[in-house]
Length: 389
Image (tube, rainbow, N blue to C red; front, side):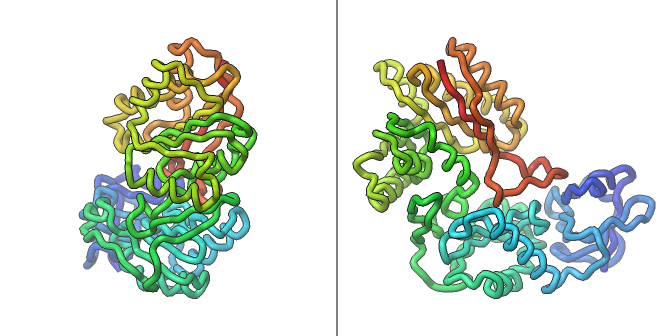
């Protein structure tokens, strides 16, 4: 097994439990090695730190798998997957849940989502992709789903020297899968939907809507396939309008509304949310509750300034069209916009809108997306429930 020695001082992040080692952290590699293989990791003083998989093509050149001198083999992977599954059975409704959350489940690069009796798998790094066949076999042994679909059609794989691809790993089957979340039914397009087909990380935040939508006129912005909107309808809203820029998303949301017999309550429109919020203000349209769940406005530190402007604008405009005493449920999934910055944005939006705002509840991602304290990258979702006066 090849041996990687780190630059002096760079072992501290490894010792803290962070699983990433950057190319600039590596002093030298001793012994024959190939990208994707398991290597031993040592400090500059030749202290054993653990084992991980190597890929010198990536800026994240090493991802730690263990801090013990143990074999990374089928049995090792089986224990890790079983541990992740047992945790989900304890904390989540497993009809729909994230089964494996990469670094947070000590399987870096691996995502597995469960929709009813079907799994969607992403192996995003070369090191974990080498174990894909074993992982599929283990998932079959532990969970025994009806089908498994591979969604490796993501550009990040190309940074690892991998091709983009998707297809059946167990099947075939109808890739429009029906699942249930908090009592609400959804059709999930596991083949062509965004990411793995559905955003499971907001499950608990959608359930938290219940006290704030009863008999309310609700606006759901960036509604995607209608997950927040349909929860609002399910929890007794009198009228729900969902806005999304994608015609395909609006079609899916409308189909999901019919699936739940909520098409008389929930309607959807393909439009630009920024434009619609301005239009509603200009026409004096008001809502009891508004939900803002936009896509990530930035994926890099360099674009944070622009993201801040975007988040501030939608929150300011939403506050201006909420009836006094109404509620704003506002979210950000941009990792580079941390909790403190997000709350600053909301405060500044409230100041400029001349609104008094009470924070009712501050939430994060669902428990099936656990946060690894040593890795700030695993904490990304913010959700604030506010009352506007």
